[in-house]
Length: 146
Image 1 (spheres, rainbow, N blue to C red):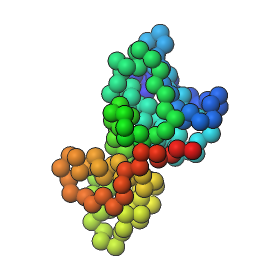
Image 2: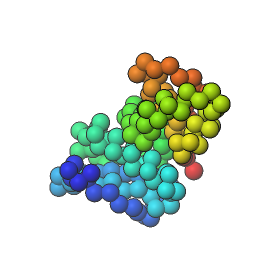
Image 3: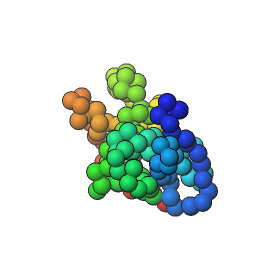
């Protein structure tokens, strides 16, 4: 992220806030809660990167704060969620593993070290791009909410 002038760090200032990003003096800062698991930190960082790439003009106006990931009601949050799923989970790996008829949805998640909720976002993204996958799990708008 150096070439994008982004600094990533952790914070323990907020227990309920999972992550946020803001711009100061042409540098973008991404802060991720230190209270999260390593998997959640990775998802939150990818989500915030989605905001930086997709919603940079809004970032210039005010910090973007995320206390509930996978919000489906706000279009910017929805787009950042899809971005995170596409960044973390590889299309080709999913295509290869999905050929195994003995592997169910949760087995696929396990093989890719993914939560079922993140995988549902990824499959939704693949379907939107014209690929044929079943959606056995509805996308959860309150994923990672605590």
